[in-house]
Amino acid sequence: MSDIRDDAERGFHALYGAPPDGIWSAPGRVNLIGEHTDYNGGFVLPFAIDRRTAAALALRDDRLIRVASAFADELVEIDLGELSPEHLSGWSAYPLGVAWALGQLGADLAAVPGVELFIDSDVPVGAGLSSSAAIECAVAVALNEVWHLGLDKSALARAGQLAENTAVGAPTGIMDQTASMLGEPGAAIFLDCRSLHSQLVALGLDEAGLEILVIDTGTTHNLAESGYRERRESCERAAHTLGIASLRDLTVAGLAHAREVLDDTTFRRARHVVTENQRVRDVVRVLATEGPGSIGDILDASHRSMRDDFEISTPELNLAVETAVSNGALGARMTGGGFGGAAIALVPQAGESLLRVAIDGAFAEHGYQQPDIFGVVASVGARRDT
Ligand code: GLA
Image (cartoon, rainbow, N blue to C red; front, side):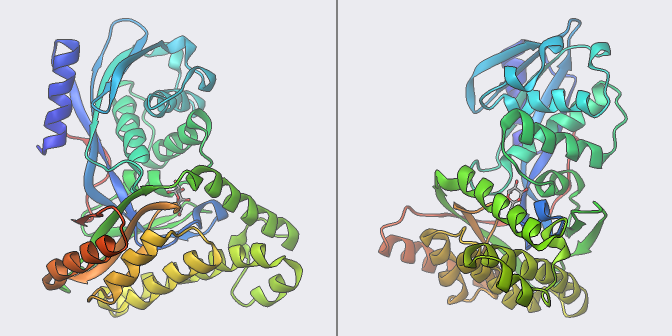
């Protein structure tokens, strides 16, 4: 059992004075490509990473939910009968929001017992690696099992998204929770966010002597929430003006007409989404035909599109990407919602230490905080551990 699961078990025992009934865990994710396409009904290609959130849980014989974690110094308690978004706030809105969302998706919350939970995580917070989806999915699989709900993984992903949209109030798409639920070692998840059809795609990194490095810039700009919402609104406005259900329905060929009817900013937002959808499909094809060594240029193009058209990158992320690419990375791009957080770089395993030195040096030269650089491996999705 890995450390974080041990830590959750120990934390639970110390707080509640007895061992948990079990430990469930769920991973964070890296998005290989397909950014801000999920809420446009488009395509994404994320993979679950080897950083997880663990939830230790025991059933109670009353109707209380009690939740605590290693990252906040408080124990939050609520009666199951009172669960509703307006009663939830702070970090506990993630786990408690999931309990509420399961009720919205058909679980009879009047018929289930209370639980106590302790949560611990080694997914960095605010880095664009879906620490929130990892909490939601760990709690969702745990409650699904102990409450005998029988919901499948895609319904549990939806519960996580609903918690995030309604209890937390972030208008995010379905990508993060799907990656955290469906991850498999060595594979990314090619998800059609309109049909929700998903397919595992072998990454083949090890065989090609390659790896994915995360460069966490440690910056989370306060624009993150308003910027995300604003981008989403631009996309919806573009689709509305073009008379289509979502930007998924606009093709690269249709961009010429879109340029005539949209203002310049809205057009560039739409162009990012349309070309990004195409890049996701291109990466899936190239992975299957030529292998991961040939996807670098597409990752670079994705970053430029986010930097110039969608305008969600930052100077720190651009520096990480540029330094990586000029020091041996085959390709690099920011990953996640943007406005801060992390970039990923596709690098030869042998070149990792040189690249670290180059990035550390470039950040020091610019007076930026030293980034946290670490490799990630595609890993298994949410599950019970013990
Ligand atoms: C965040 C959201 C996702 C997705 C990405 C951008 O991670 O949670 O739903 O929109 O940003 O691709």
